Length: 419
Image (cartoon, rainbow, N blue to C red):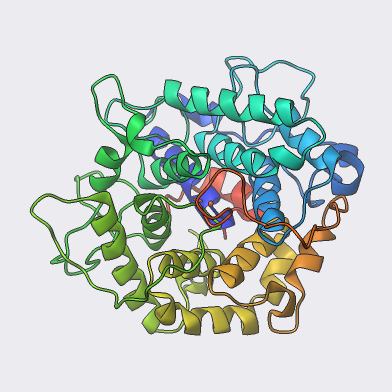
């Protein structure tokens, strides 16, 4: 559920296509930038003024989830913008510049965008101007996700590709958040999403990533630990969404291999990996992009925020406290540059740890997020800020292995969905 996850998932999906020598190069080519009037958040209902080509639906949805988690209802025109992005078959692309033109075979459907949009619209539908319309969009999106489920029970970023941990996790979390049992989504071969997710889990005895999840097996079939995939899989394995809150009672992070693995145990193992990964510097890092002049790893703000949410949801929030403090002290410039999705990630991380997103370091994250789009409706202080459909609202499950393809990667780098 995050800026990094979305970029990473799309990049890795493109990597698989390119590595297989498929014809997906053309379909992965960035589409033309949206006209200025379309890209303007306040003019169209879209959050943020940056090019939405790669992350329009994603950042809009995360903004909704963060606003609902803090008691706000998005403006009606913002909800209308997201509903209008949906294709007639229920799917969403990353962004459609011309929603008056029907989706066709050339429209690159995006399982991640569809899943997070379903989750976001479920969160806002009760207070929307047209609840029935939003509800119809949620049901159509869920139906489409079922229709593109792979035989192994999982999902790929784009329909037809091999399942990956990130896409599968995003969908599982969206299902759980909207009141659908993930185990009820079975493939034609009888496999569940958790069957697929467990194939990406590394055993506790793995030397490099005990308990972690891989994005996908590499070309040799080896699983490589990936913090991004792990954070997403922890939430999915626990049946929670991107706005999950701190679980209780607290527990120590441990990794235990069971004779018969379960999704919940694998999720807790993943949390133990994340806890150890954060010990080194208090935050996660990302390798330099291919061709970068500076070979040093860079701080990964988005994945760090996601790891905080995952650890809190797994009941090991104490191990996430240093990371949250690091984000408070260092994330302001990143959030300002990255925009709505970044503000949303930080809000959800703060809320998961029972911190105040209005007093995050020296920033009021809620005010900053709200300022990126149409003014939301004033919060009802007498009502709960949680979702109508999940276990905590927005106490539920956002994004995105690091597959790196230079040509596609530049687009995500510019869009803020990939650093």
